[in-house]
Image 1 (cartoon, rainbow, N blue to C red):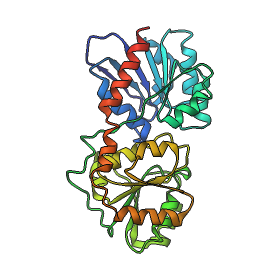
Image 2: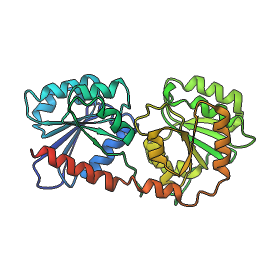
Image 3: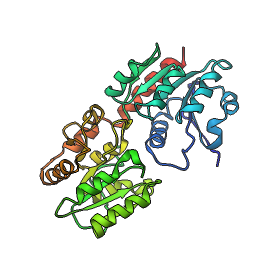
Length: 327
């Protein structure tokens, strides 16, 4: 389904278009980013979100006479938007949701007017490859009203404590490490929430090692706040090219401590609201989970998440977009 959503809450004529191919069909970090940012900016400028086939239709984009275009899906979409500037004098902004690898290097090579690094680690990585492209660092954010420790909880029907992992069921998320680590614990359950091509193999591994202490489910995004509140600990042991991980913020905003890989990006995001470890050593992961469940974290997870409020992040984007869009 091709969807175009328009927001125009004020008299400013500047128009920003987001191209998000999977906006109506997926709830990954990139789609959450688009939804939250447009929600916070809709009273400041004219916005439009193109999804489905429209997101890759340059003719459609040009017909809207944008001042700024933000392609979300990279590769050919980014190249088309870059070439479109030869026809229409708009500005192009790319936010680094692909992570530090070939896709975001390509996103720099197509020479956006601004490349947004989501962490300081990504900013340093991008700066070494910038070739004169302007690099700015603006983190992803979290809705602190939606995700908070107070409110209703889902009944997970799992033995406590419940360790929660949220992320696509793909190889780079390394959910198998969480399964093997929890299997080393004397008690507790693991709930993995997500969808993807690795579901069957993960389900078989989880059931063989954890039995009824394991479950894989998917939830509508509207139920995620209740899900986080129902857990005792959050983990996501994905590879070091993870672009950001909004789910870490959602978990911490809900009061959950985190066990995650030790790298520059995760250290910046999680701070002292969790335990960062060698994510390739399952015994170390298990020991970190046990320690995290025993420790009194007080309000540290929530306080860390508050540094990434969408109110703060959206203000940074507003200032940047108005600056480049009016030049």
